[in-house]
Length: 101
Image: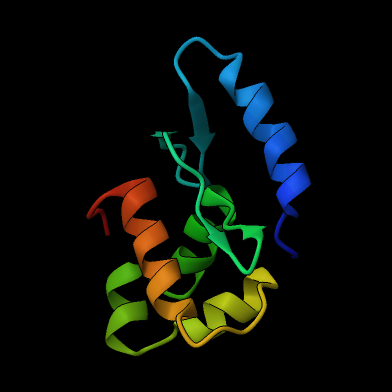
């Protein structure tokens, strides 16, 4: 799965802004979260649903952080390499979902 381009993200963001309550993201766990700000990595949107589902497939955020699996998460999401990718993905996860595990 590849990330969204900036122009695609802007189109999505414009559609989201039309919603009265902001953006609602439904995840595999049937949990709905309100996203106020989209996060980007190398110009591509870090998709909240895909990020959550990928991290859950690796055993949850605690397991991913404990075993340093963010590189594999980035690869699975199809996002490009940066030296700060792990930090960016971790920040995006906690921004989108708070401290859930």
